[in-house]
Length: 417
Image 1 (cartoon, rainbow, N blue to C red):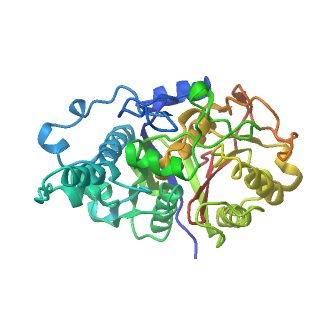
Image 2: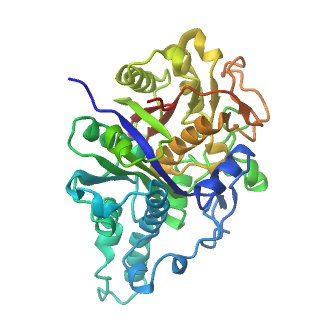
């Protein structure tokens, strides 16, 4: 069976270093950190008091009061990112068969702020239940996909993916396969997350998963650096419009890149830790290469999961060496989490966008904040430290790995007719 080709025709984002695609790329290429002290709530009693928050976001700028009441922050970020991507795609919805247009949207946690607010309100009350009728539909992780489909009238496949930090990569892979198989012509896909609140920060902190380097918070996200002490929480969303190539061609759409493959695997190892030899990462990357029908030597850039955790970064570099062999030294590797922080379920979409922008601008975004070599990480790897590097990118691979051992890799190629 010959698969249909799938291309990217629209991009949108809101994240800690950019409230739109242009701002995101400008800060990515210049190595700007999105980390700072937390403003969303009083974190003064927390061990970690900083994060990568979205800046200058006011729901009133995007939603009327009635609409905002129905939307958790994670869903608001979703709709903002989608709005930009839809405008960018220049789709004429009146000309589309909307039964062939779907939405698959990822979120690892969903409406945790809504859950926190509702339960706190009840706990602080007199025991009388006064829960909002919007409590459950604001909280559930699939509701962003529902809101997106209702806003744009998309009646094709519609659901949410939940696989921790791999959630939005799984969403993109599912959308890719539905289009390939002729089950749909186009998708709104991606992911969003908004977990920078007392519960989110407290939970990750108690696991000792996040950095507590408050004194140097702006440079605390340090992938591959010997001094790294955990990831920095991020938030926001990223959206990609995926279309079947002939469909995009027929309407004269601009095409950013071609999504050519995806790989998914399970570590079957630990609830939070990556397999020490990168077993699941190896399998996901190999599957993605096979699915894309390209050789390892065709990959020029890998946007790694690279979270800046002491145990996580080492297995991923080992996995890269296993999959790519000697070619690993010819590739550029970088972790844009050094700038955005870790967007959890939204990470895959925002980092996929970074790959596409890098490809279109022939510029690899850097890994910032690196200070000291880790003897466990091969110093011959080109980790694109400190500054962006110019190069032609024929194909780029993006990795996302989640708690529970969920692994996903996606591959984008430079578009050719």
